Image 1 (cartoon, rainbow, N blue to C red):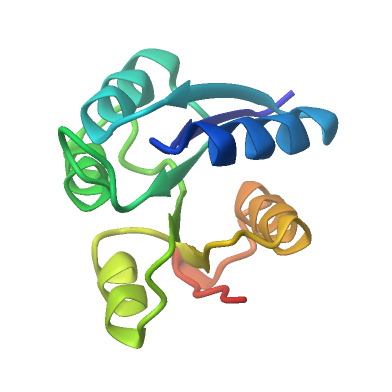
Image 2: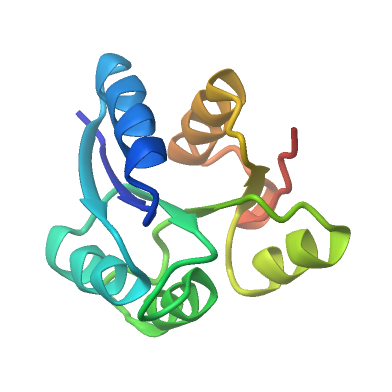
Amino acid sequence: MPKILLADDNVEIAELLCRNLQRNGYTVVTGDNGARAYELAVSEQPDLILMDLNMPVVDGWEATRKIKLEDSVAKTPIIALSAYSSDEDKQRAIEHGCIAYISKPVDITLLLHAIELALKNRYDEGVASIQN
């Protein structure tokens, strides 16, 4: 059963996504800020990370950057989740090491598809942009 780290400070969104992911056969570990997401990435060694970009303490941008510098989890695919959906934000997420960017509100079907692709290593050299 693949393990997903879900980093999101919005409790309602995190609970909704967590339930949907568990219902689809994933084990889910959650963190509510970027600092905690980094700690959990290193300690839990998830198969994939869902990273909200706008969080307290350490934002998702910085957490992603730190994770990509940590040898033990540097190759873990990270999918950015954000309410911001400008082309610049999407490009910035990809430049920071995210393999995909999904705008909030999250389309669960699209998210599950992105997760499946990421876990099967179907992205061209690990980089793609999936948008809703």
